[in-house]
Structure formats: C-alpha cells, structure tokens
Amino acid sequence: YEWSLALYSHPVAASYASGVAFHWYTGDLFDNVERVHRSFPQATLIATEATYERYRWKPGTTLQEGDWDFALGYAHDILGDLNAGASAWMTWNLVLNMEGGPNHVDNVCDPVMLTDFRRLYPHPQFYAIGHFSKYVLVGSRRLRTSVLNTARYRGPTRPYGTCTSQDGLQAASFLR
Image (cartoon, rainbow, N blue to C red):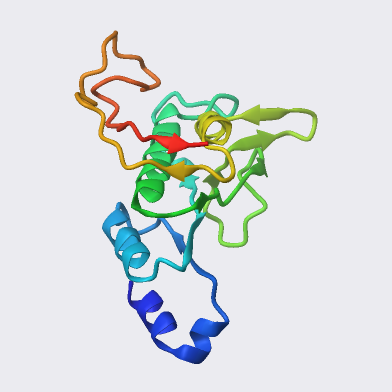
C-alpha cells in the first residue's frame, strides 16, 4: 500500500501511472490489494508474478503430472486478487524446461507447463488458469453477490480439490 500511496500522492509521478503491479510472495494480503483499490480506484491493479518452487512438491509428484495443490494455490490467489479489486492476474513462468529453467537465481520453479522440447507437459496450474480464462472473459465485471452456504457444497471430496468444503475456495460472480 505504501508504494501506491507514494506514487499517487505525487502529482507528477501519478501523471505517468495508470496502475499498480504486485506479486504474491508475501502471502495472502488481499486486504492490501483492496485498500489500494479503494484508495485509488483509477488504478488498474495487476497481479504480475506468481509461481511455486519445486521443493514444495508432495512426495511422489512427477515432472509429467505436477502437484494439484499448486492449482488450488493459484485458484485461491486469483479469486482473492479479483475479489479485492485486481483486474488481471498472470503467472511468472508459463513454460520452462524439465529442469525448471532457464533460471538466473537457481530456484527451480514449477511452471504452468514443462517441456522436453518434444512435447508439453501441462501442470495443474494450467487447468486453474484455464478455468478462469474460460469463464471470466475480458471485459467481465465483478458482481457484488453473496452465495449462501458456500462452504457446504454437496458431493464427495475430490483429491484435486474443487467444489468441496475442504478446498477453501469461495464462489465469485462475474458479469460478461
């Protein structure tokens, strides 16, 4: 919030800005995103960097299949940012090689897709991003709605975590 306040409080600096980009690396700080949105409604807010590192994989995770918890993390962050006032969200690494590179700081990232240069291996994050891309189209507007019993979806718990009370996802509505 402080950077946005400094930017938009300075008339000359503010004249060169149309928005604020932010990263997810400090945790769930959606209240800060909402605070910037409320304080500077003219600012386009864009989440510009999100990725997981491979060291977070659960035991048994493979290069070809990835970790479904990462898809849940992406969905959680996308919903949180959009609900707080962001208008766009993007991942840091769309495609990397099988070693998680190239990478200039030697932190092996787990991208949306890996490639061995013969084929692509979509990871679960690919499907999380794809879901939002399919249903929240360019120009969509968030509707201020509430969904009763959002933590009480019916049906069995799914290991990939969608629409169950265990996955922690909340419903959101967008007008196309």
